[in-house]
Length: 313
Image 1 (tube, rainbow, N blue to C red):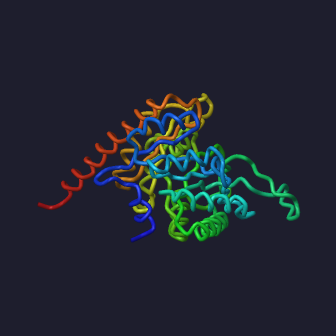
Image 2 (tube, one colour):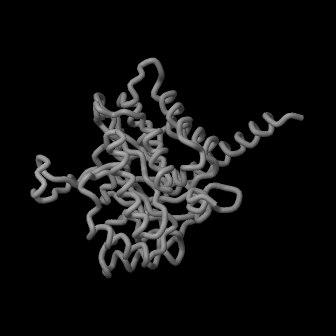
Image 3 (cartoon, rainbow, N blue to C red):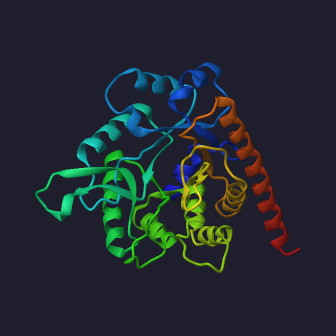
């Protein structure tokens, strides 16, 4: 069984798609009180670092009712300066405590040294900064992912990034970059469909001959089917001259369409509704989760019917 199949099998209910929500502070008490029907919840790892405290106690309580996915924003997996040892120690302790269904972070960097001076103090950008899609950056990313996986004793999932600039010296396309990462390290991919669409709307894929939707569909078709073990769905904000991945609204129709396309290609992948700004009442998130279930059921049924038509009589 491949690492992708192992990671996927942890959370999938029989015959369907595991659907969860991001568990954020406004809903800590409501979720524990109401215990809605969810297949998993996801939290930001860094919010629960440390050996004690009320937050970790709440997460332990939630873990009694739900599988938990740990999603990080601070590992800086693409940093040429390497992984911060303290950060990795904290994550390893949290993994041992919670036994998460998945651990994930981003194909990005945040740590470095000013002006490339070796002896300069390390600084943290406090943001998810895009990587150049080069062989050198891929080597760095692979080495860091391997270090994390060896310490955690499990494969992690790496998420595609929403980015507002790209590097001129890129020598491969993003799908190839991510697929090579997975092939070389045994990690899996966390496919954020909203990130993908935001990048297309912002012209990151550089082909004016196709629509943003078509550019995203081509991107999906470039990813090998067995690498994706989680999907994120979220909202974005159109500011006129740029589209911002703000996770502050319902999933738009185009992202729902791409979600169906993704499931037809990748199969029944665990799916998360991600909402981080202007967080609405819990029933709104649960309604988005319901729509994800319905959309997944329709997409998977369509895939089954298409496969049946392709089989010779």
